[in-house]
Length: 337
Image (cartoon, rainbow, N blue to C red; front, side):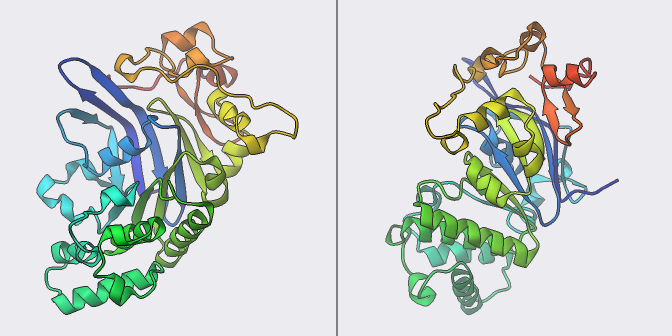
């Protein structure tokens, strides 16, 4: 049996309050192998970030209610790790670079102090001089000019791209084996976006890390990722290699995403938007969440949660129509609600 670097199986996340329950993630499963870039793609509210925050134990419970058949790091059961021992995993084995570095960084501490905190917590044997030297080396690695001076600056004194680089420096400080980058290029101009992605790819290759890229940008995914999961309304709709998913898409939602991209149409053609809106996850549909917007939907699509099937082109697709075509229409995944 192949041991993946990181693996989630049937992850479910619901946020419960006296008024309602929001089913943010339903039956999410995927794996990431060593040294690969795995992208999780979906529109806002699709459950991309919530899935990874649940795996990193960054969601407060309650109100979050989290269940999973498995969460594994190199075959080790992460759910069995005691909370008091979790700090040995976060940062050292799995690290996360958060979206919007301006809000993720603390405005009242210098950038150097915040990078140094990684060492103070996880490497208490290090001296102040060693921590400063290591922090300067990290800023140098991520391309911050004059790192000795900028180490003592505050986040608001950095540009957007420099703040993102500082966040990446914090993420790689303890040399993790899996780095999760949540929308790392949001709100940056095109040139800086390319620089940040080049940096992440360079660091991944140098350190043999696995990179999990959370994004809504299919163009970025096509250029950087090895494999991709397409998410919609808390559910993984299609998973496979970039060539499989973008070259021979099977799920109607994936087809809709590709057809609605401006760069995907010929000059003079009109955009083909996906009509309708995502469902209200506080009233999660019994069947496929995409069924109300799907032009290929059948009655069963609104009645039962769809099975996940492996199709001849190589990817896994969660769809009744595709399952029926493959002769596997009766397989049903277990989804906790």
